[in-house]
Image 1: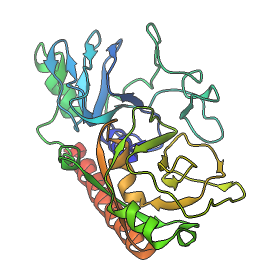
Image 2: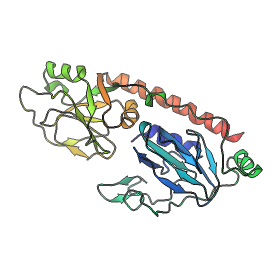
Image 3: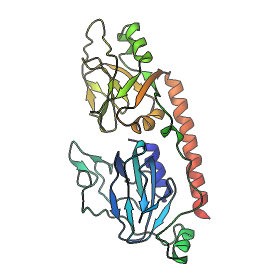
Image 4: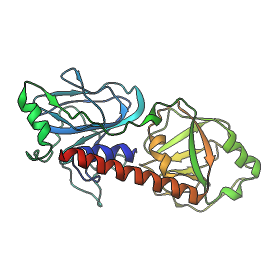
Length: 302
């Protein structure tokens, strides 16, 4: 859902960004660390702790075997990502290690984690982050971490309504100008029935002068559909592959991680931008991400 936090959690522990992380939503789990483990937590603030001691977020942390890793209710944001050195060892399905809950396949047996599950990782390379190993061996510490951290994401703390930028969709011009204007001028709230498949938006219903009927066609992460109820739906990471509702627009890729971090009840507004603007924003973010990754690698070599 939030690829920025997922990628960052992997980079911080020396993984490729395609390794599996553990995604948690609204309320976090508890884990027992069975062997020395290098991990990182990024995204929303679930107040992570190891043996009751606060665990620093957005930085690599070496936790000694036997440590109790606990997460609480999310204080800011909506989702957090636990990166583990070596990645969670699950078999790729169709080139992906992610879990498709509705289909019941992929990830960890195609289902959410439950009490008693054992997540296997690649044993920690002794040469990785030697300074952390030295700190852990120097005393009776239960965890060790460097003084530096990756850049915190301040967008998770900003008060609403949050502005979500979008590019007009395939059927945008089929709507009357008054309907398009109402969509951009209205404030919506993410409905309680929202999930990884789609966010239902509560707010003023959009009522086209005449029903718009289309043939089902491909949809993607961020597609904004308008069902007969007049209340828009934004398709999210576990969306279906096709849809038969008119497409108002496509959320700019750069804003998808922010949207994924907004819990039910959050207020949002939609701002129309052009395709070239959306592309420029995404390229700028990727340049920032590249600089962040290089900084992590430089720090890890010290």
